[in-house]
Image (cartoon, rainbow, N blue to C red):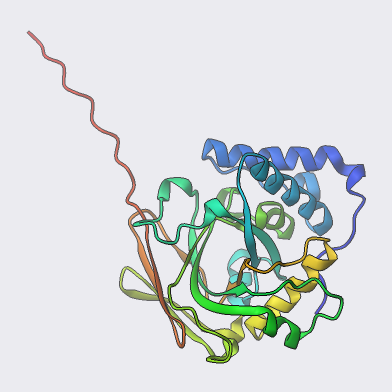
Length: 285
C-alpha cells in the first residue's frame, strides 16, 4: 500500500503553514467554520498539510493536552465518496477528545459533527521497528473495543480536499470507547459486522472489510507511516482504525448506538442545543 504523503520543502512554505494553522485554530476557538485551507497549501501537497497538522496539534499540546493515540481516516470507500477524498490519512488523538464515560457528548464543543463506528485497538507494545508486517502489528495489539468517532470539520460545509482534512488533524473531533475489551484471539477484525443506529433507526451498516479490506491492514499502514514520520506508535496508545460504514450526522439531541459482532455496543448521546433564556419582561406603569 502506498503512502499518502510526499516529502515537501516545508521551510519554503512557512508562511502558508502558519496562516493555515491560524485559520483552523481561529475557527475552533471562535466556533465558526472557516474557508478551506487548500488556497494556502494547494489541493495535493500532503507533506505541507501534515506540517500544518503538526503545528495545530503542537499548539494544543503546548496548552496542556496530552497525546493518547492516533486515528486513521478515510479508510472506507463509502466515507471517501461522502467527503470527496480518495485516500486515507491519519490524525492525533488527544486526551481532551476522549469523552468516554461522560453522561452526554457536549454538542457545544462541535461544529459539524458526524458519527462513525470503528474498531479501536489498544496497543500493548511499541511499533517502531523496521520489520513491521501484519503479524507484528497483530501481536502488538493488547485488545480491541467498539468505538464511536465523532468526526468534525473546521472547514465550512465539509468542503474539503485531502490537504484540508489532513491539516485539520484528519477532521478529528471526539471519541467514545466501548466497555467490552476483546483480544484478537477471540475475534477477527475483518469479520466484524456493524450496524449504527441514530435515535433508534438504522443509519449506517458495514463490516470489517470496509476498512482498507481489514482493520489490521489499516493499523499496519498507520504503523509504517507513523514510523516514517519519526513518531511511531507506542504501547498504551489507542488507535481508531477507521469507519466500517457511512458517516451519520449528529445534530444536538441525537443518540447514536453502534453494535458490532464480537465487540458489543457503544453509545453516545449528544446534548440538546441550548436555548437562550428569554429576557425578563419590563414592568410598565
